[in-house]
Picture (cartoon, rainbow, N blue to C red):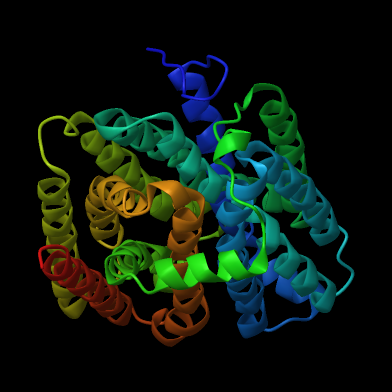
Length: 402
């Protein structure tokens, strides 16, 4: 299976998918590997659990802020230079976290890390849409999602092993090493898919004009909200993992796989289904199927948690089913958004990423602390976020069909 992206030297589809997935993996690795270490970092740096949550929410908010610019910068200067510069900064910040002497130092470096970590997934989406169209684009998006899905499954397992064997600082040295390897691979093999002739000047006035144009498009805003809110229903369990594993299930730092592997297994299966159904179902029918699966999972989760205490496998089974529906719908929703403004795909991808990271940050910094102490409250919050995502999708349909 091979393909040559437009505007680029020939590269196999599988190799391109692996590079783009590895770039997208930076996000879950940066979030999930250090979750098992929360109590240990807090003890060494004299931080409270609420302060440790700030290292995650600040990271997500700076990711959200910078995603407004990653795609735009790639529209002006090319996809590859933006990715390489971001990877270099990411390596520096990971080393800074590893050497942090106080909680304030760790919080600072985590904030700066967010400025670099989101480039891969934002610019990667633009590369896919630069290179392929229609069913081919959906298949590649699904393939990237399948490979990318490995990261959230193995990241907390790696983090738990490193924590138990060496300590929490080893986790950030691992992230720095990953960034270095990926920097070398991207420099050597990642194609440039955005030719000079198609680039936009990086000037403040037209940039602001384009942001206002895209931000004022109700279709794009509603699609971005649908993607972000659907994901937030799943991500709530990711950021609440220390509470779920340590408090609700009474397990240890080596047991995070019980939550993450089923959840990410669902992501990979949903992405596989999306790719297989690309030529058989229209994007709208695929999205409806995804919402049906997510709704069933959320309803079961609420019903179980209202009657029974947390226990395996029932606490994690709804998360797996929900993530299957989420991953089934997400490629189609993303491509609908990217096709609204073909000449500004980088900026469109940035706005998707901004909504995605901003709502994820709110889930981590606001929703999770309020609900993570109760399995039922977590289930209700998942259902509420899904309901909001579905309402955004339904409103998009109304606007698009006007």
